[in-house]
Image 1 (cartoon, rainbow, N blue to C red):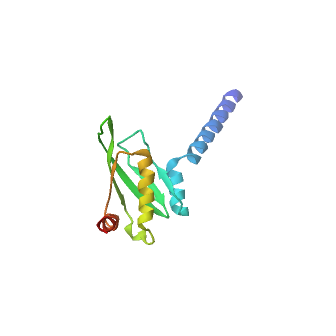
Image 2 (cartoon, helix red, strand yellow):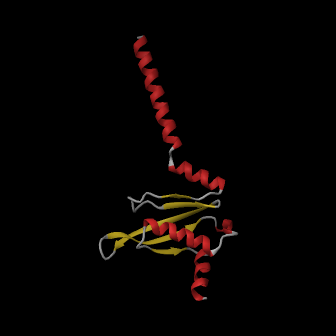
Image 3 (cartoon, rainbow, N blue to C red):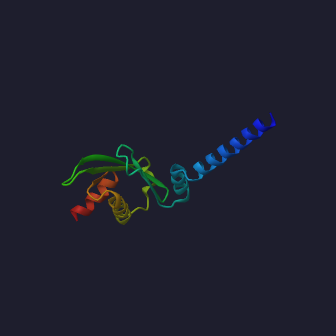
Length: 130
């Protein structure tokens, strides 16, 4: 009986250690921490086109939706649509910040056409017109 109790306690300790490690290395937790601290973090599952990616930058969460299509050589992500649920937090962002985000996205998806949702879209179009 004592052996069984010891075995259960050891299994419980191993399970709790596993859950702690899983919590520490959880990308969603890192994303939340980056949002709170106002730092940059890019969270994406490159291997899964159906999952959206998330970018935290200066306390603003951007979400990007990927669309699969054909390139000259293979099937790949050909279109990305990016938006934020909190456009009121965009105060202080400049075109250079959005160009930085586009550059970071193109590192993973070089053939993708990147589109922004309003009001970011209006800011980026003003640059094209000038």
